[in-house]
Image 1 (cartoon, rainbow, N blue to C red):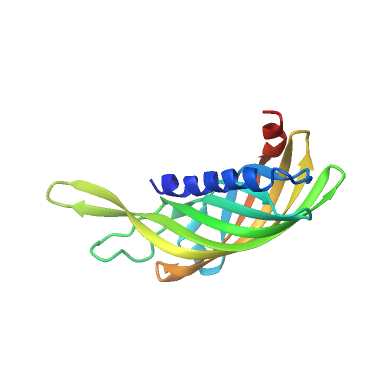
Image 2: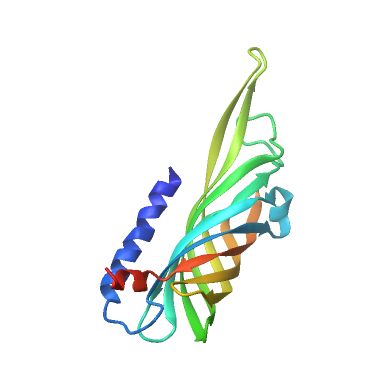
Length: 209
């Protein structure tokens, strides 16, 4: 459900980019981005989170005729959740369970293209939700009722990446640092996502339509 809230923002940015940059001469006017990888917890975050397989979706929207671009990105990171203390109203801690992020970051970046290679960096902020599981045990009926706790938080993220052009798309590797401004399990949230994936050049595709 949270993804349904964040995805329209990405689509809106794409529609605006197509209109605003239609006259730009840049070869990298509009890329979509999809990646897979792992988000590695840093510091005290590793006390309750361990990395699992993660995904991310985004866009690169060119700004002007230089190397600047706007980078909206949805991070769908997954973690193994080892609860330290039970949530209010619950008596048990969950171990080896699963937590998932739905975080939107909007960053400003700069890309330098050298032949088939491109190098970029970015920094921005945003927010969203991290869902952590909860379990209520009914000892009389021998039932366990599962639920999710929605942890809202703001984030700041900065990072860098390398791309290689393969025609109508770029293959990329990206590393970043994400800092949360709210606590989970009374501890700060900090993670280092590492992502590999592909960025199709949508401006070339749309130019052929």
